[in-house]
Amino acid sequence: MGEIFPEWLKQRLPSPSEVARVGRMLEDLRLNTVCQSAACPNLGECFSAQTATLMILGHICTRHCSFCATDKGVPGEPDPAEPGAVAVAARRLKLKYMVITSPTRDDLPDGGAQHYANVIRAVTSENPGIKVEVLIPDFQGSEKALRTVLEASPTVIGHNIETVPRLYHTVRPGAIYSRSLEVLAKTKRLRPGTLTKSGIMLGLGEERQAVIEVMKDLLTAGCDIMTLGQYLRPSMNNIPVCRYIPPDEFEDYKRIAEKLGFKTVVSGPKVRSSYRAASACLQVAA
Ligand code: SF4
Image (cartoon, rainbow, N blue to C red; front, top):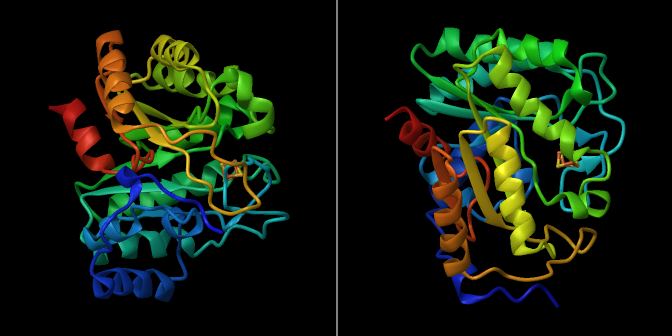
């Protein structure tokens, strides 16, 4: 029997025609979205609003995070035609703001950093005025790789902290908490004008005080935007949900994070790191 969602996670299905149209267009361009691979609950809303989080560098990850639906295994070579295809997708979707992410590619010498830079440059040169947010892996802490991405001038660098340090070994075994904080801190040191963003999932057994400590650590790393959302189990192969966090607790966390000093906080059961990303970024710029 499937998961029984609380009332606040049930949602009205959007117009299938619009969802199908965007899905077909992305398929034609042989592009993946994290929306589809992560079975995101907001897919319908986003596709209907003509936004999507594109996944570059294939759909196979070299890591094994227990919360994630992305395929695990040995990925193929990056597709040299992908930067152009992503730029075309941005044009066809008439995007003013684009979010790009990828699996973690520990198999590549630069972790895929040059490919990220090529995609950002293709998108911005093909779509003047577009803002690009890249949700990057930790590149195993490589400053050279991070510099390569930053030199392509993305508007926002996102790197998700995902959960509290105590749960890293079960939820994010291939990641290191301090290294993830360092990705955000280094971004601010190397390119202070770049906005930084990080997201956490709740409902995996984290303590309230531990979440607040993560907020403080992110602020120390100079993080501007924070997202908090409910972890949803993508399949029975993934780690189970410990608790469905009610909306008022998300509101409470939002108040705490804003009081601590984040420029923008997006917090709610349906929130994902790229959910309504454009408005979060514009709030900071406002
Ligand atoms: S590194 Fe990212 S894509 Fe890979 S398993 Fe973890 S969350 Fe999923």
